[in-house]
Amino acid sequence: MKVLVTDPIANEGIEILRDAGIEVEEKLGLSPEELRQAIKGVHGLIIRSNTKVTADLVEAADELKVVGRAGTGLDNVDIPACNKHGIVVMNTPGGNTNSAAEHTIAMILAVSRHIPQATASMKEGKWEKKKFLGQEVAGKTLGIIGIGRIGSIVAQLAQGLKMKVVAFDPHIRPDLAERMGVELMDLDGVLARADYISVHTPLTPETKWLLNKDLFDKMKDGAIVVNCARGGIINEEDLYEALKSGKLKAAALDVFEKEPTTLENKLLSLENFICTPHLGASTKEAQENVAVAVARQIRDYLLNGEVRNAVNVPSVTGEALAQLAPYIGLGEKIGAFQAQILEGPIEEVEVIYQGDVAELDTKPVTIAMLKELLAPAVREDVNSVNAPIIAEERGIKVTESKSSTAEDFTNLITVKVKGGSEENIISGTIFGKKEPRLVRLNDFRLEAVPEGHMLLIYNEDRPGVIGRIGMTLGSAGINIARMQVGQDPSHKRNVILLTTNEVVSKEVLDNLLAQEGVTQARLLEL
Ligand SMILES: NC(=O)C1=CN([C@@H]2O[C@H](COP(=O)(O)OP(=O)(O)OC[C@H]3O[C@@H](n4cnc5c(N)ncnc54)[C@H](O)[C@@H]3O)[C@@H](O)[C@H]2O)C=CC1
Ligand SMILES: O=C(O)C(=O)COP(=O)(O)O
Picture: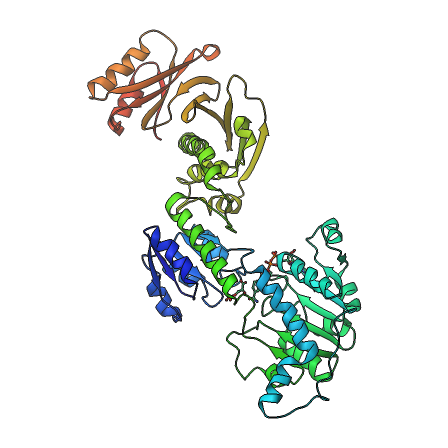
């Protein structure tokens, strides 16, 4: 396994990967073309905010399984492109929360007391005590937009500074905000009340230029704006005008629409504007946290298939994976079986979990089943990342249901697949700790081991037919390893599920179909 690191991360992370026997290549500051070359043959990519994981880069990656962001924001990663190629995208939420929140408070205080300007003035040999009259934050109102991990720590710290905190976040439960002592209100309410406005949302199509001229106009005269979240949430052109006109007293930015930012950015010419070059997460502690977290996550995914903090697949920890593994295996077998017996396009899939298995988080089982079910029908590689997306794109309705009872079994997984006029129902169970068995195929009750080369035969239920099937296979030199026969007395027919040691050729299959009493024969590979 090989991991490429294209933005600087703490050594502790690199060591974790190397100790696990993973080859690590550190190549910083690559051009897009160099990156396209460097990504070849690489299984994991570790980035921060500088590397852009574009559709073009993903296209060039031939072996890439996982992108790990040593940090939080994933706006520099084309997640739909990763989905399409089955690449898991992970970040390390929480590792830099404190640092980003502390930096925000540092900016609020620095902008209130003109610390950067006063430092610059003293370094020019001046003593401008009168010029740098500041304002206290105590008693002022801080309006937070996006009160998630960072926003809520900022709120706590600000309350420690005796600020009143109000917030706008359409996705947060009001009782959570209330417990933080934060008054949740609509955006206009926050804009009208706040002396300081600090944004802490991710950059998404919804938050792009969220703060623009219209919103600055709604703020109190002399409000102060802070952005330690992401460049692009604030429209910089509009911010420049609002600062220049005096509508806003000041602004402090850690992040910019274009990074690195140069002196071409007009904001840098303003006296009432202070900034840092995207330093929110740049502390020893945060960098160690995120490097260690991303390295462990990538190691555990590449070596054991454990998924943590992924944004495009459900998380499965080592412990859960151990519990789920037999069911994932069974789900895959049922999916593959269904795929091979269904004729026509899949329209609807229903997965029913009963008994013990219903108590687990079964999403990974449904996804594993779906992956095998879709594999023969779609051209592109189907995997756990893109299977649900492909199903959705194709208009396949997938539903899951659970019940605590499981007929005569301790656990039962039933998959119903509808397509055209057909519906097939297959159930399976895990015997003991990990022995998978198929126990139902439509109306037939079986107990079949789902593995290897199999033959599914429907035949008339009368003497001699099974014998002729055995003879046909035997004379072709094919050994029957296992055989299950189910009866359907109302239709006077049997279903036979055979496992053979050798692959059954098309010729032998035609021979079987020519036998008197054999109505259907189909090859299955499980
Ligand atoms: N300057 C720096 O170095 C750092 C910057 N960040 C940035 O901070 C962002 C937030 O990080 P966390 O707090 O960890 O994320 P989080 O996901 O815990 O919180 C984000 C909050 O924003 C809210 N939100 C989303 N859309 C919104 C909208 N349109 N209006 C109002 N609220 C909205 C969400 O409901 C959520 O509560 C990251 O996405 C990243 O871009 C993160 C770490 C360091
Ligand atoms: O974690 C985040 O979202 C950050 O913005 C930190 O960015 P960085 O890793 O310092 O480039």
